[in-house]
Image (cartoon, rainbow, N blue to C red; front, side, top):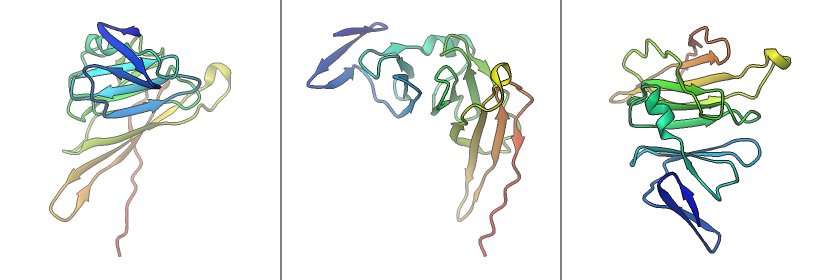
Length: 172
C-alpha cells in the first residue's frame, strides 16, 4: 500500500490501482519516471519509481491557470523533468522544466479553429547550458470529407513562439 495524494494505491498481484481513476494518456520518461492523465477525473499523476507509487501533481497546473480537461501529455525522452500537457479544451500547452513543480503557458496562438490533437517533445540537442528540446503539436479541424490542421514547433527553452511548419499534403 502507498499513499497517492489523498488516494490509496493498492498493489495486488503486480497490478497498481488508484481509485478512482480512468487513465487516458501516459508518457514514459527516462529512468522510472511515468506521467499519467486521468481526463475523466481531472487529475495528472507522476510516478518516480516505475508506477509503484503515484503522486497527484494536478495542483501545479491549476495554480498556473490551466483549465480542464487535460487532453494530451508528453515528456522529453532524455530529460524526464521536461513535461508538457495539452489543456483548455485542446487549445493550450503548459510546460514544466522542473519535473512538474512549476508550469507555464507556452502561448499557443492562431489555431484558426483547429484543436491540438497530439504533442511530442524531442530529445535534447546543443551543448551543456545550451541544451534545448523542441515541442511539436499537431492540430486538426474535422470537416465533412476533409481535415484542416497545422504542425507547430516551439523551441522550449527559447520560448520564441510557436512556428508553423507549413507542411502541405498532396492527395493527388
